[in-house]
Length: 412
Image (cartoon, rainbow, N blue to C red; front, side, top):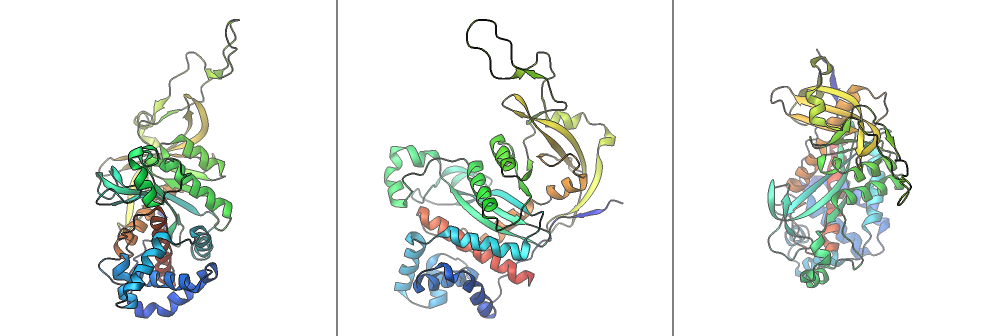
């Protein structure tokens, strides 16, 4: 019988009647109140949090304001302006939020989760909207794409930060010039890939020193990007990232050399593989070549599905970087015992890392999807009707704060 490897508990978050949360919400709001200069801003944030926590079928601005303040047309317009155009500093709020997360969820071996979350949208005027792959629908569709970082530990999980992914056409195509102006896109904004956006957020969390962290977990959309993995390593963190089956590695470090100068042309400076060294193999090929005794059955507790049993194998391999040998990493293989589905991951942890640690990390990525699900179903994450760059980020900041409020109430 295998030992059950704990990951993080499934949190059954529920929105209670707001009447029972008045005092708790007032105390939570007071944590952030000093970050606002004006009374009207503090009141607007409190109203927003009340609305996001209310039991409403849809949580766009108007129904939230009407539910909290009653029939007040001016209040609706004021809130629309506060979210869409308000000049308030999200970063200060989020930095304070990270400190609060550290109190309830922080551990020395904290894990940062990275993933994308998309919201289907009609029309073409909301900032960054485009026909692109939409994870929520599992197909290409008109949507806005966001990138998020979350925190998970043995106590629970929540979201930390957010960035809107802006397709390159929005920034460079003359056909989008008027929409850029209407949506208030910063004039100096440049195109960044989703992994680059995630890297920015990870760096901000690490540099803030507000939250202790050791690991980063991500799916293959990020794990398949070597620059992202190198960026994580540069922050002093260890990554556990799923990678495509086509990812190539060496099982032994191949020889390299700088070719001798032949007396003509430029003198060679870049290393190349020594002629005749074995070619790098795909991680799928490595998995297929492992003997039966290399696999061991492991049981981990993940999500609401109960214990998950899989066959796991680990191997030290050499990552490929621009066709040359890169860092020594762990190849972690996980095969479902019923379906045979194979998950392939690379992990930049020390050579003495136990297989149980790898199994635990492989089960620390699912909570961010649960954060998205709870935030969309309970907190109106996708219900916003703002179109601006500022509005998208303001809305997501408030949803992040509302999510952690519910997490904190559940823990306490």
